[in-house]
Amino acid sequence: MNPRALSDWVLKQNLFARIRQQKPVIHCITNYVTAGDVANLLLAAGASPIMADHEQEAEEIASISQAEVLNLGTFRDSAAGAMLKAGQKAASLGHPVVLDPVGIGVSSVRRQMALRILKEVPCTAIRGNASEILTLASLLGAGSPCATAAERGVDTADFPAEASAGQPDIRAAVSRLALKTGAIVVMTGPEDLVCDGRRCCLVRNGHPMMSRITGSGCMLDGFLAAALCAAGAESAFAAAAWAVSAMGVCGQAACEKVRLEGGGTGSFRVALTDAVSLMKDSMVETLGQVEFVNSLDLRLYAVTDRSWTGSVSLYRQVEQALEAGVTLVQLREKGVSQDDFLKEALEIKALTDRYGVPLIINDSVEVALACGAAGVHVGQSDLDAARARQMLGPDRILGVTAKTTEQALRAQAAGADYLGSGAVFGSATKKDAVPMTLDRLKEITAAVSIPVAAIGGIQEDNIGRLQGTGIAGAAVVSGIFSAPDIGQAVRSLRRQADAIVSAGRI
Image 1 (cartoon, rainbow, N blue to C red):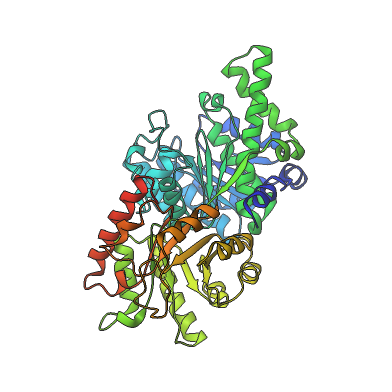
Image 2 (cartoon, rainbow, N blue to C red):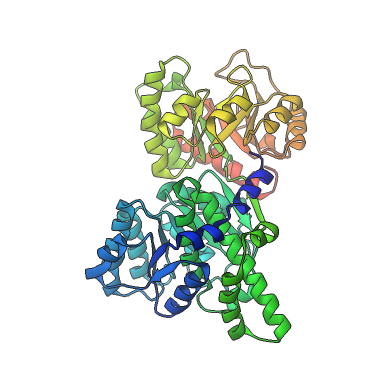
């Protein structure tokens, strides 16, 4: 499914009609500053709110609700037990749970509670502003270089403008957070970002006036929970993106009404609820602005080869590479049975999940699906790319080897998410590999809109020669797994890749 089709898929969810038909009960343990606004907005959307935070009734309320909202806005001890009990009960019933880690950058109490909820409650979605989401990513080891700027926590007034939702490092951090938590992550701001670890989309609806009233984010929490209920688990990602876009469209409509009537922020607060009550799905479909962006971080792509395992297991080698900073792992096995491949894939998948790094399976769609990998990579002599995409469905990553511009364009048309092109410097693992000139690599990267990873003989002493080729990263085999010190090799390769990324040359 191409990006335009994915955007249309989100905007055609028709969830306003479904929310109003289903009237889901949304249990909100939220902050007292905005509880009334959240309840009124849910009623305007067609849902039924329950605002209850007593620990002794938390499970009982959760059992008669269809979703939970856990909001740390005015966090107090008396709500801690209620949040955990309600969240656990909802999750056990298969109901959506939305966590809003409000202000986790400002106090250790909030940080500890957010981490405890994530440890004890399987959350469906995490919604916060940039400072909150990137602080949480940093706490969980999924952060980006911009995360240290996020510790103001309550708002994003001083958040650096260059740390935008569209920035690759930010997308990568949010995607890693989604992978590590198993939740859809919604980062709101001037541009909103929705990621599930495999897919990311930017939402460009909304209006600056939404940030000038208290509670627009809290209202989105409840609206998001209602949308997740109406859509069901199979369409949770689409529902999250739709909810963000729909809320933004309502904000735009409310602002226009206030402008025409000469009102201010107080009028806007009422107009926003009015807009939700009057909104139709056709308006979201027409006015929604959802752009799918690639969430893959290809900067240092480790491709396994057990030729160099020696006395160290492949599992341990991959672990060392992850510890040192590889951004993607491909498990490649050519000489093992399907059963043994799957057994190993399950073990490596558990390892990559721990580090929030996607796992790609080489060649075998069956193994990728069976182990729950993020995707599969196929070569020109392997399964046809179009058939691989059909088997994988739209949600998983498809990488394709492309040695010519023609192959690259065919792979993109077939639904590839990225390309692997080489061998740029020969190959230590494929003796018959035909070297690719850097000019040919430039031609490929210029011809396609999807990212390209260079592969073939890439080492610490030659990765710098890839500057200016337009690639999104380097796929490295022997340069990592034959190194006497895998950690040192990865750190050196990663530093050089990061420097090239920062210079805009990858």
